[in-house]
Image (cartoon, rainbow, N blue to C red; front, side, top):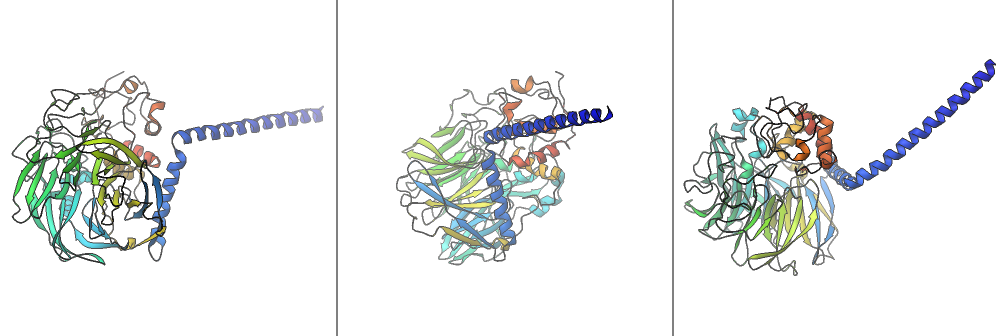
Length: 586
């Protein structure tokens, strides 16, 4: 009997073990199936491929003895033209700011905090030894360095422009935020001489000369929200003629709503204006009025001046700038105020209508986070006569614009990379164009059909010769998840969300982990969030960022413009925010 009992127990054990194995296999199979579904819905394979490609490029650049990046031209088919591009790394992924320009075929790049380097026309990277005089050392020592309502990513370099003086001799103009003291931020344009030859660009001195400071000279810290908002400064430079520069000066969010001062219509200030500067006398005058955040500037071959600028929520604009014209901000916009439910822009008498001032020739709704615009070279792109290329930040897309007369007939998105911000564009002498990304790369674009017989690979050297990024420009590798998350928050989230208790376009996030969803007093949530009964924890935040509609059907938060692999770092930082925010009980 004992033997039979042991045998039965053994048989029972084998049956149970077999059933458990089948159950585990079923769970694994189901997990693989649903992982595949989720991966497909979230474009997992493409995102992972891009992430690995980026890391591989970075590692290769760090370990290669000859510091060479071997690049292969990739093609993109558009409606009328086939394009191709290569992408060269010029540094680590960076936050806001930075710009490109070209001089005699050499591409100049300024980092977010003013370090200037060059990619020569023979594809060699090199430092110029120049740094824009932004007052970075002084700002590091100031009270703002530890102020949670000040972000280094809001303090930035805006643009570069070389102006020829003689063969091989140029003045390099730079526009940027400048720190002058605890009650004095500035919008500034300075210049320094440079020498240009076939080998590249060289500084002839380390000295800079002040050219222009936007009135009133000192911009006091804002009285609402972020102390200084250089990301609303525009700052594009354009040479109008031999003696005149135009600079686009944004309102820095001194708009009557986010600060008590509405600057763009105030004649006593240069904020919210297009300003003309005499490069010989440095005399400045207002050229046009009523702009918000002009991110793009282009002088077309026929003499028309195109400007692109951010609207508030919706209403990104393309304008043709005319001397003496008023473009309406903050009294007119096709956009509305940030937040949900929809909130009217308080100074617009007719919502949804640009009833005051010059109307834009085109407006994007929803906003794409519009960036710079360049006119296409008709010799390089014969089927794009008088057309333009446009970049976007939030939209992560490059666009081809068909322009006929003073109208944009259609907009064609031709390249999208999720999580990318295409910050700046510049034309190249050979007819192509270059694009600066927030990922620390320069993309060079050309007509694939014209260059079909050219070599398919390009070698870029010199990455290791460039100056090291400032700590405020990009987080070092040793950052904790919380520190990395803080940097990511400042770049990707801070334009809408305060890390404290201040109300903004989005709800304040002080103390968000452990707080009931949709409960901040006075904030207008979507029904999806207002009616949700749960509490924010780190997993729920990650789920929300990854797939908002899963828990919050109908939410109106735009998708984050960052790698999804960074979401745990964001939530780790949010868990450190312990500011008490007034809430309602639900």
